[in-house]
Length: 105
Image: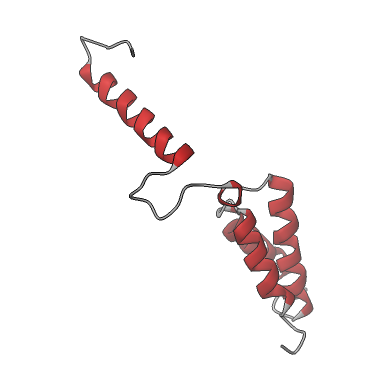
């Protein structure tokens, strides 16, 4: 049994919502197309940064990032991709896309 906050019922609603969302996150529900797996969780920050630097290096190699805009564009790309909290699936997609940049494919 979960203790109730009799004087403040909004706490009861918050606790019930938290428990319901936690169950959805951990196990999925029949209403969802699938549950959550390891590929849906954010990568460790070091792996996210490695992927971001790969993208930046490819953009530099293609001349999109060049000496006159390097600081600004590197900051913008890091900011954009850093806000995504990349998952393993995201990383795989970005690496696949940017692996083809500049190889004639």
